[in-house]
Amino acid sequence: MSVIRFGIVGSGYMGKTHAEAVHRLPNAELVAVAGGTRAPDLAKQYEVDFETDIDALLRRKDIDAIVITTPHHLHYEQTLVALQEKKHVLVEKPLATSVDDCNQMINLAAQNELILGVGYHQRFRVNNYTARALIREGAIGDVVSIQVSMPTYAGAMQAGGIGSDYGWWNNPASLGHIMNSAPHGIDLLRWFMDEEVITVSSFSRTFLPGVPVEDTTIANIEFSNGAICSLFSSRALPAPAFVGEEYRFRIMGKTGLMDLDPYGELKISDENGWRVVSKQPAVGHQGANSAYSDVRMQAYCDQISSFIDLIEGRPGNIGVGKDGMAAVQACLAMLESSTERKWISLNS
Image (cartoon, rainbow, N blue to C red):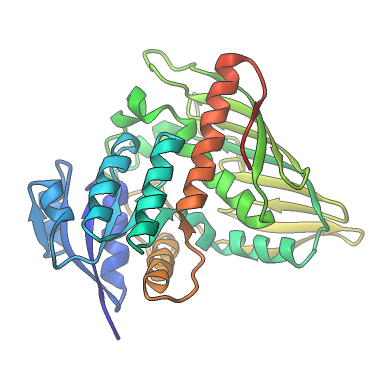
């Protein structure tokens, strides 16, 4: 069995998450970490090298693949260096902050025959991959409309004791909350239906005092199969999110309905009524005691395994560059639609 040697850039919540995922896999080895004030402690915890300079890590000859977990606006330059150094790269979503940057990353990976993956771990949650299978086998008929709910109570995460600094959320260079929240939802819908976003209209607002970027968006989205979607995303909640609505998809097909809670139950309804078809064990992603539990880590371990599959020439379900760019394009269209007060048509 071959072993893929990893380096991780970024040492916050997601840096540690990916370090733990790599650590758990028999065909992966964590070699070094760099970036962020917690990198020395993270390296010490996993008994690997700490690099004081990110570029030095990206250029190491004993590393095959890089995981990038830094703030959004840093993804592009760090990925280009890694690809130039002939490293496979897994980038936490969003892939970048512009479509042009995404294109350059995708093209360079292709030129160098490297895998460019995107951190869409939601593809590996039990209810989500079950929902995809059911939709593709026609369990609710052709999808015609979807409601997506994504309200985030930031106070719960900041009080969770997981040692993360969310100050970068307010950096205009990272473009606002929608770029942090919506890529998962956009990716799942594209993945479920194998369709593309073609039209977006949106209202984006900032409701939190002292925040210089968007924190709340309501968007309407049209897909290439004619399905229409409404999406609500906000981190301006003054209290914990509506019960069961933290992340929720309500999908209407021509012959049935689907109620998908990626953190709870997956239910479908037809002429025989509602029934539960899948349950996701509690993920516990907001608390210190469960943040690195087996349940939460399952998706990240499976994602790294799928990334390795692609590196070694086997099929994998991981999101790749074009999937990352599709979500970036949709999120940018939401912000543009709100600013310009018009519908935005995307190139399919």
